[in-house]
Length: 505
Image (tube, rainbow, N blue to C red):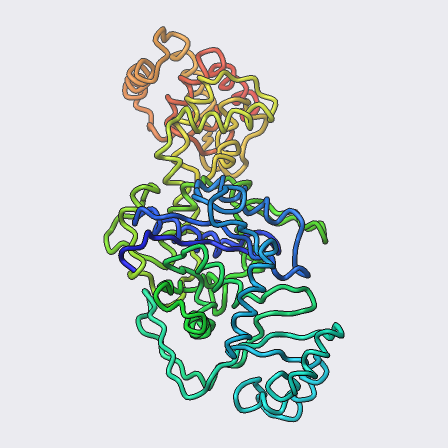
C-alpha cells in the first residue's frame, strides 16, 4: 500500500444540489490527496436513472469551481481511467457480474417484488441471506436449464452476492480503528438488476475503485455499514492486495437537537445548506446558496474543514495551503459535528477584515450604484476602510453607511429624545461657525480646532458629539465624527447641520 500513489475520489450522484456535507467530504479528500502528493478523481454515480435531475451534474462542477477545490481527473477533467460516469460503464460491470456468477460467489434471483413482500409478512425481520435463500426463487434452488430458460425468455432478475455465514469481517478504518462485523448479519445484497442493466452502488463502487486504482476511500459515516460487504467483495474478486483503506467521516448534525443536518434546518434558522443557489427544475423552488448569500469561498472552506476535525492548536484561520499541511485524517472526530452556522458568518467577517479595502470596495461599489449614488471608487474605498470591521457580509455595508452618500431626510425619534438637548441647536450653530473657519478639513485639522473650542466653552464633549452625529447621520451610529465630516467635506457637513437645526429646533 505504501508504494502506491495515493488516489482518492469524490463520487456524487446527480440527484439534486450538492449538500454542504458532501462539500466537506470532497474537501477532506482534496486535503488528503494534496498532502500525500496524490490524485483526486471526480466520478459521477448515475446508476439510479429514476433519480437523475437535469442540471445537477453541472451544478456540482460549478460549486467546486467556486470553492477552489480542483480535481486531477474525472468527468469534465479527462484522465486515463475513464469513462468516469457510471452509466457509461455498463459493459465493464457486466464482465465482473459474470466473473462472480461463474465463480459461484453470486447467483441469479427471480423473486418478484410481490413475492418478497409476502415473505417479509411471513417471516419477522426477514433478510435474504444464508438462512432464507434456499426458500426463494433463485439459481441456487432451481435447475440450471430452468434458470437459462427464464433468462432467455426475458424474465427480469437480479444478481445477488452470496455471503457465507460464520465469518468475522474486519474493516480497518483510519478514523474508527478496527470495525468487526459477523457475516451472519449481512444480507445477500443485490449487485445487478436486469431491468435497467445497471449495477447497484455496491458493485459499481468496488469495480470503479479497483480499476481507477483508488487507495483510500474517504466518505460519510452513513456508508460505514456497507464497508464489511465491500471488504467481502474485494476478497471475492481476489483483490485483497489492492483494497483501499477506509475513513468514515462523522456526520454533520443539526445546529441544535438530534439528527442529520437538513435543508429544513437551514430554512428554519436562516442559513444555506447548498454551496450555490439551486433552482429545482421539477418544483421551481429556489434554495439559497453560500455564494449568493455573500460568503467568501475561502471562509466556507475554512469553516467546513473545522467541522469534524481539529488541528489541536488555537489556530482558526487557515488558507487552503495551510489546511493541506495541517490536516490529519486520523484526528477527525468519531462523533457527529453540530453545524455551527453562526461560526461560519464569523469566518466570513474575519475574511472581510483580511481582504484589502480595494477588494471589498469592488464588491460594494455595485451596491452603492444600485442605490442611485454616483460615487467615485476612492470614496467607496474610504467608506469600506472606515466600516468593514462592523459587518460579516459586504451586503450589510449599505444599511450601515448609506449616510455617507445620502443625507438623512429624517431623524431617529429615540435618538433625538436622548441626544438632542434644549441647547443643542445653539451649540450646532456655534459648531458650524467654527467648522466654517477651518481651512484644513482633514480629520486631524478639524479635531484640533473643535476640541479646543469645546474645552474653551466648557461644553460637555458627549453632548456636542452626539448632536453632531445626529445632524450628519440621522441616528446614533457610524465611525468617529471627524472621519464622517472629513469624508463629507465642509460644504455638505455645514448643509446637514443647518438642516438638522431647522428640523429639530
